[in-house]
Image 1 (spheres, rainbow, N blue to C red):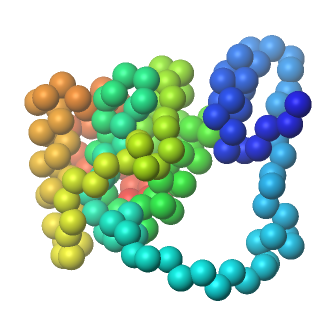
Image 2 (image 1 turned 90 degrees about the vertical axis):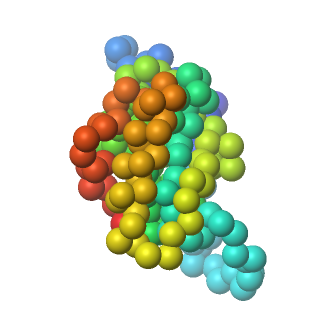
Length: 157
């Protein structure tokens, strides 16, 4: 049976085989020829293509992680999810997903926009505000720090 790297079953199988001698091999659908083909599609701008404060919602426990990015949300989501897809607990959200063996849905269901900001110097204060707000409501993942900015990751640009 073949699985792509983005298959939702791959994390479950990887977790099941973690403490066995079974090795998991990944198959990539992105060949060099597919990556070098030029696509001339014009995409309509969406709110996911702007700098924002965002929330990632764990589909298992419905708790949230708050972050900021000046990257497109699509790229930010890809970076965030790459951590737990590769069993790399580098971010608080990846730690939450991996250690709790929780699930994350696709971007349109897992990622919520909190605040549109043109001034990137306001990203950190607003991020703190939303972290504290979710914590007060009991909706913040326990792995997220309350008093300090999120650790710098490639997605926090």
